[in-house]
Every structure is written in C-alpha cells, then in structure tokens.
Length: 293
Image (tube, rainbow, N blue to C red):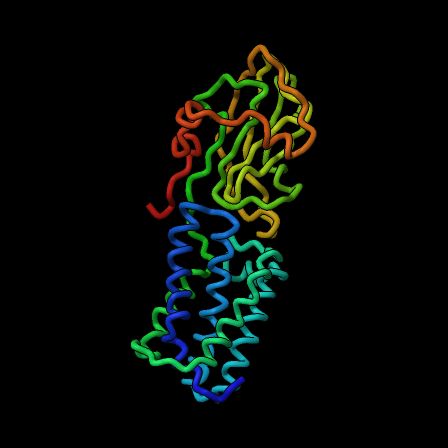
C-alpha cells in the first residue's frame, strides 16, 4: 500500500457516490423494491465507504498513511465476513440482522477503496468535511430495531369463508428465514381438534409467505388459524416479528383442497385476490399499534 495520504480519498467522487447510494438504497429501494439487488447494493457501497472513512480517521489520529490503509482495509473485511458467518456479532448490532454467507459475493468492492487511494485527485470538498456525510451514510446502513410495516394475515376475521384450494398467507414485519422452527409459531386446527400439517413457501424477498395444508383442507369444515407468538430464538433462526396476530376462524366451501407436496407447489397454488386483500386491511387485521405513537 502506498504512503500517500488517505485523507483526500474521503472527498473522492466515487466514495461520496457510494455514500449517497447507501442512503438512497436503504431509504428508497429497500422500501419500494425490496429484493436481492437492493440487499447487496448497500453492502457493496459500505465496503467502499468504510475503509476510506476508517483510514482517514486513523491517519488524522496520528497513524502513518500506509498502516492506516492496511488496518482499515483488513478491519472492514474481517468485520464484514464475521457478520455473515458468526450470528452473535450481528445480534450485537441488531436483532434484525440475519447472517447470510451469500453476501460475501460483494467483497471485491473493497478493491474500489484501494483504487481510490492510488488515484490522486483534486477535491472540491474539504476531505475533513467530507468525513461527516460518510459517517452519516455508515450509520444509515447499520441495522436497527425499528418497527417495519404492519404484519397481516389472510384469511382474517373479515373473511370467515375461505376456499379450501387457496393457501393461507402472511405478510410479516421481518424477512422470514428458511427454518423448520418458523412453523412452530403457526397452528391450523380442524373442527375435530386435529392439527393440520403445514407447508410454508416464501413468495418474495420480504415478508410474504404462503401457508398450505400438506394433505389439503377438507370441504365444508371449520378451521382455526393461530399465528404466533413465536418463541424468541437466535435472530438468525427467527428474525422477524414475534408478536401474535389475532386468531382466525374460517369455514371452507364445497370443494376440497388438494394435497400439497412441497413449498414450490404451495407457492404456485391460487393466491390472494384484490378483494381479499382489501377485506383484510393489514392495520385492522394485525391488532398492532406503533409503540412510538
């Protein structure tokens, strides 16, 4: 690593652009278009901003430029890798963090910091002043335990009749992981008291889930659907809303549902209609109130 000062890189357009990307992605794309891409953009931008910011702070604290760069680069890489491979570190920052080894695909973004350090440029913004927006961007991408959109369920109390061929669905607050423990928070019971075996299918990269009866729902039968509360476990097993939704009682129609063999078949089953979504308004259905209100 060269001995050129690391401080001017804080005002490099590529670094400032990465900081803007973090904010736009976390408060825009992740809200309006959640998915794989929006999840990786902030990680990649973080790996550009963090080492540049850390190296500048170290150098301003008296560390030699070359050493500051190496320490910042290695510390950023080790922290990011550990976050994805060791769940307790993520839990220290937020109960919402879910370790994902797939996030390591963005590690090469660290090379952008090395590239910036090796390219002298004339900064139009004071590098020291630029450290403030970089710090703000880094804080913006830190997972926090804020309350996300209201969880909801279909059927709900407003839909006492339900087609046996239609899967039940949930929209949870947090991204639900693939785990057998997830079904421990749901109970579907027939009128004879027997519990129905369930298959859960993820419908998107947020909190939308389809829930199907493995053996199919019977016709003209009353069912009770209980959703949560889930037992508090490691956040990488159950990193989502832990409160219970209202218990729902519904009766199926004249046509019986077919057995569902796996999650893919459940996801492909007939889903919600606009009328059903409108009938089960999420705010009214969840019984949830904003604790900050």
